[in-house]
Amino acid sequence: MKRTPKKAAAATPSPIASRPHMPGYGMPTGMKGLLPWTWAEERLRKSHNYYVVTVRPNATPHAMPVWGIWVDGRMYFSTGSQSVKARNLAANASCTICTEKASEAVVVEGTASSITDAARIAELSSHYSRKYKSFTLDPKMGPIFEVRPKVAFGLREKTFKSTTRWTFT
Image (cartoon, rainbow, N blue to C red; front, top):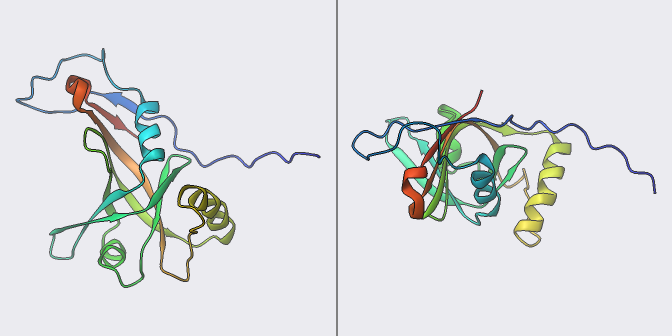
């Protein structure tokens, strides 16, 4: 059977690691001991539930759990078309995604956009159905969002001083 080459992924290049600015927490200086990006990506892929934080028009935050997938350096999730998340993201694309396990947290700040390309949705749906046992991403149910990261933070309770900030270019 002839294999067709996979199309080039629209992956985000590896982000730049640094120490987050955390006055009063006694964080070390320098780059030694930072978490690798692979540590964060593993948790982003494996988390079953995620918290999505959006901003209401009156500037107050709104947080809700969702199912989602981390693919090609982006977060994908869906929501009802009339949900607070969808309405908030239509007005302000800035959002934060958090993994479910606080003792090994990954927090991604980024920009969400609705995706409509049928081929991409089908590709993402295969990832989604493997993770969530036959559930798929269905644009008829509501928008499917792609979150492009701007900055991410990794916080590991057991090695708190290894807290890392990743910046995407």
